[in-house]
Amino acid sequence: MRTPDEGDQPTRQRVARSILVNGPSTAAALAERLQLTPAAVRRHLDQLLAEGAVDARDPRPVGARGRGRPAKEFALTERGRDSFDQQYDDLATEALRFLAETAGPDAVKAFAERRASFIEARFPEVQAGHPEASPAQVLAMVFSDEGYAATVRELAPINGHSVGEQLCQQHCPVSHVAHEFPQLCEAETEAISRVLGTHVQRLATIAHGDGVCTTCIPDAGINKKEQVS
Image 1 (tube, rainbow, N blue to C red):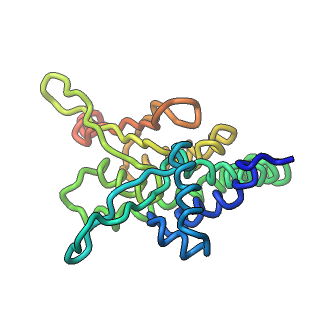
Image 2: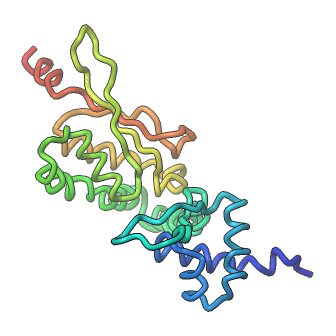
C-alpha cells in the first residue's frame, strides 16, 4: 500500500515539470495550467521547497506596480533540475554504450566532437557582439548559453604581469555521462584550444568529482613570447 506522499509524487512531478517547461510560475498560474486547486498546488510547492527542489522569489517588476505584495514565483533550483537531468543522463549513457559496442570508440569520439561544435560555431558571433570581452569571457558567455553557468577568474599575476585567466564552469549538463565517457570533456577542451589558437589545460572536471570544471587559458602575450623564443 502506498503512503500518501508516494501517491502525491506523480502530481508533484507534474508541478515541477510545469515550472521546468514554462519557467518561474506563481501558485495561481500553476493551478490554472495543471487544473488543480490552489490549495493542492501550494501543498506540493511546500514539499518541493522543503526538498530544495524549488525556491520562491519576488517576480520581476513589469510596468506599473499595483497595490499589495505581488505573488511569489517558484523556480527550479539546480537540485530540482538534476532530478530531470538524471533521467536524460541515463538514456544518453545507454545510447553511448550502444554506440561504443556497435560502432567502436571512434564513433563515440566523433559524437563528442559533433556535440562540442557549438563552441567554434558560437564563438565568433558572441565575440563580435561583445568586443570589449576577453576571449575567456566570450567563452563563458558561449558555455553559459548552453547551460554550463560559466564564469571567468583572473589568474594571480607573476612579477606584475598577467599570466592568463581561468574558465570556471559551475554546472555541467553532461557531467554524469562524461564520467563514463571522458571523450565529451576532451572534445570541449580541444575545441577551446582551436577557437583560441593556443594550448589550454583542463585542470578539473565535475565529471571526475571536482566541484567545478576549470580550464586554464594563458595570456595571449605569453604565447607570442614563447613562439618568438
